[in-house]
Structure formats: C-alpha cells, structure tokens
Length: 369
Ligand code: NPQ
Ligand code: MG
Image (cartoon, rainbow, N blue to C red; front, side, top):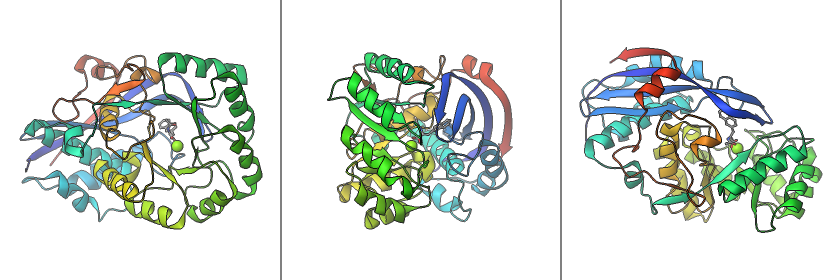
C-alpha cells in the first residue's frame, strides 16, 4: 500500500513527571518530547521520538533529532507515495539517528495501518491481547524511601520490579527489597552502564538475591567485556544500550555477551528492526522484553503492541501512564490485574487528545514535502 505524504508536523511538548526519576546517568523531572505527525492521502499518523534532552543515555538528544528530521530524514521521503517497508531503506544512507528514524517510520506505519483499518499489534504479530507489566524504580535518597515506593507499585499490581543501581546504591537496596517482600517477587536491576569489569566482585554479591537479570552493567560499546563479566556472575546479563540493531544482537548472542535482551524500538531504529531482533533472539532461545523511554500514550501504545509478540517472555517496562504522568496526552493506559491491554483500533489505536495536546505544546513546525 502506498500513501502520498504532503508533509510532517514536528511538535514539541513538555510533560512534567509525577516524581523525579534518577538513574546512574542523571535525574529527570520533566520529559521534553518530540511528536511526529505525518499527513498522508490516507490520513494522519502519529509517533513520538524517544530522544532525551541531553545525550547521556545515548548520543541522541531531542534538538538533534528534530534537526536531522527537518534537514535530512523528512526531505528524503518521496512525494509520490510510500510503503512503510521502504522507509528504512530510504533512510539507511544517513548513519545513526535511530530514534529520529524510528519516529518517522512509526508515524508512516500508523498512517498506513489507520488507512487499512489494521492494528499495530495485528500487523506486528501480537500473540495475546494483554501484556504483564513491570516498573522501573529510580535511585532514591534512602532505603526506607525505596521500600515505600516498591510497596506502592506492588499494591498497584506491577508483576515485576526493576531497581536502578549505581556504585554505592546496589547490594544494600537489593538486599532490603528482598528482605522486605515475598521471595517470589520478580526482581531485576539496571545499571545503565555505570560499572567496569573491575567491579565484578561487587556485582557478584548480587548473585545471592535471585535476580531475573542485571541490565547493562558495563559501557554501551563494550560487548567483549560483558562476555567476560558473564562468566564471573550467576545473575543473567541483559543488554540494553549495547544493542542498536539486529546486527548488534547477532554479535552479542554470538559472543555470549548477554543471555537476555531489552528491546526498545526507538533505540534500534523502529518497530520493524525491533521485530527482527525478536525473531533472531527467539530462534536462539534468548528471552526478550520491551523496555521503556518514559513514553507518552503514543509511544506506549506501540510498545504494548510489540510486547505482545510471542518471544517477549519477560514482563516489560510497559508501565501505566500514571507511573510517569499525571495527565497523558492520550487516554491513559491503566493497569488491570498487573496487565495492559493491547490496543485493537486501527494503527496505534490511540491518538493525542487535542485539548491536552494544545496545553502541553511548546512549539510546532511544519515540514512540507
Ligand atoms: C532504561 N528506562 O531501561 C531506561 C532509561 C531511561 C524505564 O528505566 C527520560 C527519557 C528519562 C528516557 C530515564 C527505564 C529516562 C529515559 C531513564 C530512559 O535504561
Ligand atoms: Mg536499561
């Protein structure tokens, strides 16, 4: 199917977080999100760009993403009609900028699926109608504060807890959570690349706590050292930042750098590449789960659809809207029995509510094709 694209709106919104979110790479209090709206002969398509304000989690940042979309990626699209399968090929000559590319491809896909009356989940190959949800818990000022936060999330129904860790905030908070809650609590940790191989003995102390996994303990670009670390730990290693493509996933699996993969579609250039990683991992018996980038309802809808694919065998960071935002720009995603329903409407199945959207908009530009 081919849709003629007349232009693309790049809209920036400011979304205050319900509480500061601290990781090993910084503290976030508000989300500065770039929304992409493509206007086609079949109707509109929406997506959001996951890039953060500053290049700390990875090299992309939101002003850079908007610049590359405006100057290179959007102008590369053909005026005369476009199938979503062609978007990745057209954008490939531009290196990197995967989050920007993901947003553009996803918006085109949303428009195309809306036109065809098909849902994102149906298109991607969702195998169930709801997904179990985990929650990512930031670094706190004290252990009692952390225990209160974890208790509240468990009470909300989250089926898996992920603790953000860094040197100086690892064994003690994990031990405290293990001692305070049931032994069968699904628990994992995420270091966001805060350690080196010299910390292996410290990280090995986490082996006593029956963690599902440790996510991205070492540097983004160091798969070889992850393979070494894996031999020193009993806790399974999961890669996040290190996996930017299906090629990277193949390398990581071949090297033994990880035994689990966190798939974040924006980080790998989109939902089609995310599905390729899913297929590859599944063929190798590597479990995957869907990560999160503090998405609004627009990105959340797409993630929930992806997380319903059969190889997503671990709960994702697909939390409810209210984990991050008091007011979402779409109808909020609300947990029921620890799960989120996969949207069934055409395309993403959700769209921004225009009154909410206008309230949070900080700028908008139109790029005609
Ligand atoms: C991770 N996400 O798995 C990321 C990191 C992360 C849910 O833990 C603003 C935008 C703040 C994106 C903080 C979770 C963020 C962000 C953390 C992503 O590593
Ligand atoms: Mg992570």
